[in-house]
Image (cartoon, rainbow, N blue to C red; front, side, top):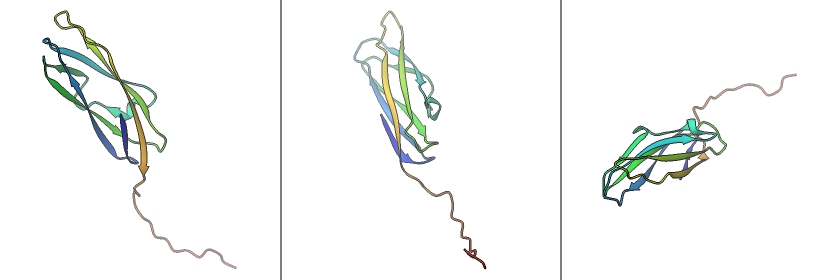
Length: 114
C-alpha cells in the first residue's frame, strides 16, 4: 500500500477485507517496522468481519521526513467458534512528492559593504 503526498501531510488509505465463510472473523491489527509510529489505525486495533460480509479499515500516515517510510500492517486472527482466519500482512510504504512552504520571509540586506 503506497502513501504519497506532501511533507507533513496526512494520507488515508483503506484496506478492504472480505469474509466468505459462514462464521464471523476477528483480527487484531498491529503496525510493526522502522517507521510504524508514523502510521496509525484510527478505528482501533480490533477488526470484526461478519459472515459473508466485507469491511474496510483505515490506515493513516503522516510524513515527518523526506526519506521513504516503511512499516508492515499485520492482521492476526483470533479464533471465534473454532474457525481461525489466516494471518494477513500488508507492506506500507510512503513517498514525499512535494514540499509545501510553511511560510515566506522577505528580508532586505546589503550583500557587501566596503
